[in-house]
Image 1: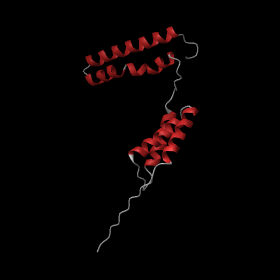
Image 2 (image 1 turned 45 degrees about the vertical axis):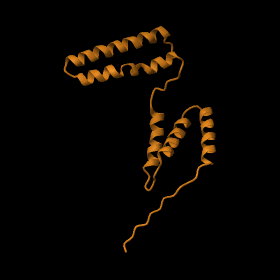
Image 3 (image 1 turned 30 degrees about the vertical axis):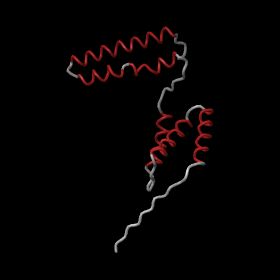
Length: 133
């Protein structure tokens, strides 16, 4: 839980935030911005997810830097020249990177499973030759 904030204080903050977002959505609608109002209504609950998780005792990161770094690694590998990935290969790479940033026990179990699976996988190669006669 956040430094010294009581459960009651966090619940109050969540309720106040949701109320403020509801009022802001109404104000936007009155100013002829129905799309913005609909967006606020749709995502209001998601804005307080981190606080609700904290109430359940789950640790919530303050930034998304770890996830952004992991996605950057995936992107870098995908964009290398002459690289082609299957959907399942990219998914494995993504999970491997995401689990690596998670708990060490999860990563170890996932790595073991991945290595076991990869030992049973064949590599395929596709070759084509084009030339003029």
